[in-house]
Length: 328
Ligand code: SAM
Image 1 (cartoon, rainbow, N blue to C red):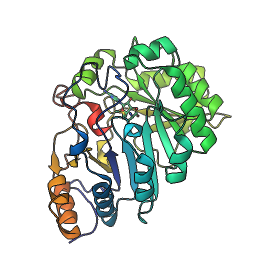
Image 2 (spheres, rainbow, N blue to C red; image 1 turned 180 degrees about the vertical axis):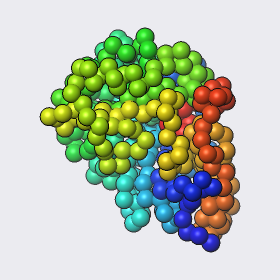
Image 3 (tube, rainbow, N blue to C red; image 1 turned 90 degrees about the vertical axis):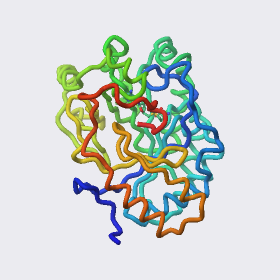
């Protein structure tokens, strides 16, 4: 049996995104709108033994990068002990976290000590009233405090993920570029994706980031740049500064041909593509005493289902699950 994860397109899968919960303490309208129902229960989530085992299985198949996500991963109790267990798996050399930073002010240092090296933080606006509107009542200040704590704890790089939305925050891109420059953060702008009812409603605010990049280039002196581990973002470097601005364009210019990732839901369902439903439930194997070999074989077999690309443009109503289930 081949011990590498190569899909039918010949793409080499080295990156696993692990959702720790589908719950979140914010209600960003484009992700998990107010009134969202159908959350899984903690008993359905993989426990830490099961997560460690499944990550070790992926690691034995060549996965070296893990990102913890959600929902809000910091809402999962005792996350630092899980992080320490994943960080101790020798083949995992990059362990990162996506968070809304609302709980980061007190957790940044323990996260770093447990083994998180770098974080991505969602931040769509620097205006408190707008933050509350976008997030369904969230407070901006704890997020800013969390970001300051992350910098002090030495989490680096800190990447700010800003979903670019016409009529919502499209007057704030230059402010966000300056904020990130002042704080030594990397900025990534993201196009809205029609995932779940929130994402589909947000399509009316969709902005083509190629236009935004041209506009920002008029204000800032930017040249094409690169970012190690930068994933699908195309980066621009602001001249005479450390600041990089990434553009993630799943809609206007998708990057499926270089996809190197798969996603595991909190309940242990392996999804082969964010924009398709192809999936395999690994939890029954984990809970029925299957051997490591059987688990590895199931993962390898699942890879055959990985679709060539998403259909966000062709079938924008296809994905009904909320983004918080897999964490982007
Ligand atoms: N709670 C964590 C956080 O805030 O980063 C992790 C989960 S969140 C779903 C991960 C990322 O997905 C965030 O940056 C969020 O802005 C992005 N996201 C959610 N819904 C989206 C959508 N419909 N289109 C584009 N990005 C979306």
